[in-house]
Image (cartoon, rainbow, N blue to C red; front, side, top):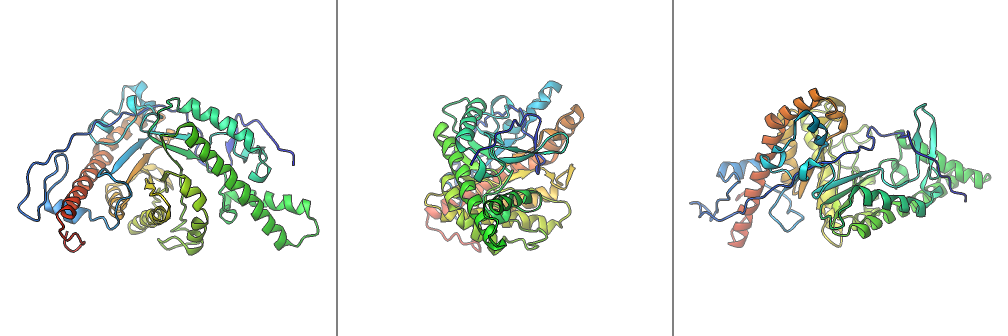
Length: 420
């Protein structure tokens, strides 16, 4: 079948709010060497410099109910916000790493030694929308029509250009959202991918009944969708082998949506995630998206975060090798993008992520959040008044509690929740 290759200059993904951003920046946190400073009077609790060691802080604030996936005590928080855009206004955001302990690329580069995100890299098959609203097919439009070799060639070029350091050891994120490799999950704005796939099969087999046509469309789409995502990830790991690689937003959950009003992931989605073990075995990190919506109640927002993190942890535990879970966390409400998360939501949702046993999280921001001097000034105020202090306090408390519990375990002391 002939492969279609179209120029994508000036085009946007037809479904997504994000465009590829030319961003650079981040400064590495200089961690303090922890030393034992003695013991407290109760239960062999050793104090941890730089952490909140009060009994109240350790017992009331954070009690992880799930073991962490990595082998270190750290709860790592990564800065994936293009604050380098504010440098021209004299705002350099050094406090991100120096004051709040967040892992930030050197010089606040957007892509650096700690984390690098690749927006729509390569030439994945996609249905794009031009400036006039017309849909244009890129590389066949759907995966079964795409040229994988050409995509991987361009992907390699993009990756080497955006992450030139051959020894890159940070988190590498592939952000591709045009379609999902599970046919059923291409709904709403992604429905055209299903429609085109069905039309292709119907054209090839005009006398087949509708059920047979859809089954074959699903088979073809999922076969080649897997191939594109699998080979892209393999290429990333081959080109930058020391990085921790993952696809943004996977695994999906779709909780607290009209079709799934519960905070838990529905059974069908969990079964499909199990079916996608081929992807999760390849990923080094699982990166579920836990963006909040103001239209939900405060309890629902915590439930949304909890359901998605739990699903990622469930998947991580099933893999042959343990995978880190680093939820993607936006400091704005997804349905009210001019509004920052309030302190209560920050506190409650970040605690939830820590309590469930995630290995850390990634704080994300859009270029549109800080594309003017006024926005930069306002965001820095928010960072220093709300986001930074809350993140730092919870991070330090998580560190103190993890080491506290490890000390109890080392001393063979009961660490059940009712004892801690």
